[in-house]
Amino acid sequence: MTIAPTVRGWCPGLHTPMEAADGWLVRVRPPLGRLSGAQARQIARAATMHGNGLIELTSRGNLQLRGLTSDGTRAFAHDMRIAGLASADAATEARRGLLLSPLAGIDPAAAPDAPDVIRALDTALTNADTLRGLPAKFVIAVECGGHVPAGTLRADIVARATDTGWMVVCGDRALACPGADVARIAVALAHALAAMEPVMRPLRDPTLGQAAFARIRMPDTVTAPSARPHRPVLAGPLPGHAMGVVLPPGPIAARMLEDIARWCDERGNGHMRVAPWRAIVLEQCDTPPPLPGLITQVDDPRLRIWACIGTRGCACATRDVIADAHALAPDLPPGVSLHVSGCAKGCAHPAPADITLVAGPGGYGLCPHGRADNTPVDIGLSLAQIHPIVRGWSPAPHRSHPTPREN
Image (spheres, helix red, strand yellow):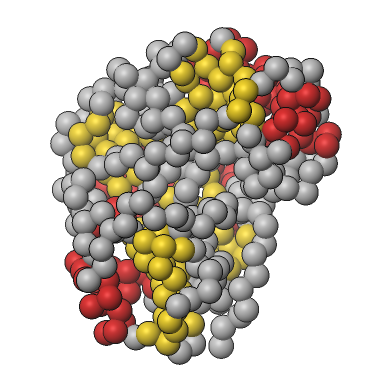
């Protein structure tokens, strides 16, 4: 028996676990997106000790652990504080939800002052103890250019490096400023948005940006850039003598994170960066870890596939969509993206994909060039029927996509 999909409107955190069919979910936000090998091993051990040993990377570069008990969530939070990976204060932990370019400070083509901007913003958010009332899922991003280009990270407030300095983007408005002013302006905008008590976020309602800038008495803004490049590939050698590896669709066993951490210590400088798009960047490393299932080649079709936990951990799902996604990977033509969703919520990928398949009691629904919550053009498809559909799909680079729905 499945449960009708319900969008909860918030994400689990370290201090705010969420119950799923396979137990409680918690998330770890590595400070400034960076982990030492020792810290990664501590997370892996805690995932096995307190949960079911499964770990996922989220679209915001967080690590999500599954299968915890209620008591296990508290024990896990304690372990993460001891490891230096979290604050003991839930409000402080919630404010520090930064989405960062994973190559800041190591990509020669990125803004050289990006690490300073990131540290200043993190400190400002940590000290902003009066900042309350922001909508659930509110996030601030920092884009520093280079291999991860401007427009790649989507957030409610974005600090974006430009050719002449920085700009702070909120909704549909942007303000140019020096890097030294980014943290002050971004936090002021966050305070303004909280005071407005909006039901929506700037990412969902871009018009909130103009009102927020006016509230902090900075109305001389310009129209925010609208370009959104394709997400960068973070598999294989990367700028700044780094190595990118991407996890396959679905969760990994804690042992894989331990093995990546060991390789990071032995073949790198002992530090890694947890990035969006299921990626891990190993610093000062020139060889990828030889682990079965890990994606290290830029032409691997699994880089263009998204799948949720499915029946392995969600009561809303009707199929093991992870297994189905892996079965379809060899059929996926170059340049075509695939989203295999357990239900219409589309948790794994809220934006459109070339092929979106939505599991139902009688088989899959097909949503071409759409999202999981779109009306399917066909329903009740078996996996055997889907294989030739995927094999015969042609990329359509100039099509018009539906508006992305944010997670």
